Figure (cartoon, rainbow over the protein chains, first blue to last red):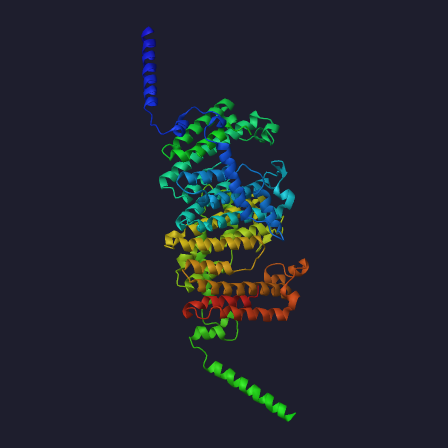
Length: 316
Length: 316
C-alpha cells in the first residue's frame, strides 16, 4: 500500500502546484478584483464603504419616491394608502441593485432612477396583496399595521393596482433623461416579467432589478445577461439565507416571527439539505455571483460585490 | 303694436333667410358627412352596415385574445381565472373603438390589435376587482358566477394583477407590426391613465380606447385630440343612457338588476335633471361627438358615427 500512498501524495502535490500556478498567474486587475476572489468575509471588512453607499442610494430613492407620489391637499385615500406602504422604512436593496447595475454599464444614477422607483412600487404593490386576509392574512409588517388594516381591504387592493400603474407610468415617462425609447420599452418588458413573477409567487428573484438598471444604462446584451445571472445568484442566495435565519434566529433578532416556515411546513433549504449545507450553498452562490461580475469595470463593480456579501452575511 | 309685429316678422324672415343660405351653401362632402349632420335616427336606418362591422371586429378581437392567453397543459389556476373573465362573452365595444380609431387615421387593424387586446385585459381586470366581496360584492355578472365565486378571492385578485401585466406586455411587444417605439411608449402612457381612471372609479371614460388606437395608427396630435374629445362625448353619453335605462327598463329587458342606482341612492342623470332632459342631453352629446369627427376621412368615419348612434339608441 506504500506505492498507493506515494501516488496519492504526488497527485496532491501536482494539484497544489497547479493551484499555486493558477493563483500566481491569475489575471490582475486591482484591489477590487482581488476582492472578487478573496475568501468571503463579512461586509464590514470590505474596503469599499458599502454601508454609506447603500444609505446614500436609499436617500436618493426615498426622495424620488416622495416626489413620485407627492402629498396633496385634499389627499385621496388611495394615494395615502400607496404612500403608506411605498414610503415606509426599507433598506431599498432592490432599487440600489438597479442603480448600481446602471452605473456599472456606464449610466448615471438619474438615468435609472425612474426604473428604481418603479421597482419599489411593484414591490410595495405585492406586499399589500400578500398581507390581505385572503392571502397571508398578516396584520403586522415590520412592526406596523398592514395596509388593509389601516385603510380597509378595498382601498388596499386599489392602491396595489394603482402602484403598478404608477410604476409603468414612472418608467415610460423617463424620457427626460434622454434615454432612447427602445431602452425604455425593453425595461418595461422586464418589469412586466417581474410582475408576472410576483403573481406566480416568485419572491426572491432579483434579476429584473439588475436587468432594468443595465438596460436603462445602455448595457450591451452580454452585460445585461451577465447581470441577470449575477442577480439570479444573489436572489437565490437571499432565499437560502432567509430560510436559514428562520430556523437559527429568534423572533427578536429577526424583527419578525421566527420559525414561521417550520410551522407552515414549508419546503425550505435547511429542511432539504440541513442548516450547514444550506450555509455552504449560500457561500457557493456568492462565489458564483462574483464570477459573473469578472471583466466588468473594476471601479464600478464594488457595490455589487459588497451587496452579495451583505446578503450572505445578514443576520436579520 | 302693429309696428312691433312687423318688426318681429322682418327679423324672423332675415333669420330664416340666413338659415337657408347657410344650409344651401354648407360645405359638401358626401353621403356620410351629411349623415354627420342629419337628424339622429336609430342605428338601423344607417346605410353603413354597422352591426356586421361590429361582429367582425369582435371576432378578430376574440381570436387575438384567445391567442394572447392560450390554453395550456397543465393549466395554472391564475391563467384559467384570467381566461374566464377575459374570454367571456362581450360586445367588445372598447377594442372596436380602438381599432376603428386606428383605421380612421390610416392604420391597419393589425397595428392596433395588441392595444385593443390590452384594453379588454384592463377592462376584465377591473371587472374582477369590482365584483370582489370588499368592493361591490357581486356573485353574478351577465348571468355567470363572478370570478372570485369560481376561483376564490386570492386567485381572482392575482388574475386581476396578471391581466394588467399582460396588457402592458401585449402592448410593448407589438413591435412586430413595425410600429415605432415612440408610438408604443405613448400608447402605454395612455393605458396607464386608463388604469388610473379605473382605480379612481371612472367607469365610462372611453377616451383612452380611441386615443390608444389613434396613436398606434400614427395619427397626428390634432387627430388624437379630436378622437379624445369624440370618445369623451360617447363615454359620457354611455353613462347618461345607462342611468336612463336603469330607471326606465325592467330587469328582464336589461339582463341585469334594474333600479339598482335608485336603491343605492346614487346621483344619476335622471335624478339630477329628470328622464326627458337626460335623453335630450344624450342626443346633444351625440351631435357633439359627430362634430369632433368632421374633417376626418369620410369613408373611414362611418364606424365611429354608427357607434355613437348605437350607444345612444341601445335598449339594454
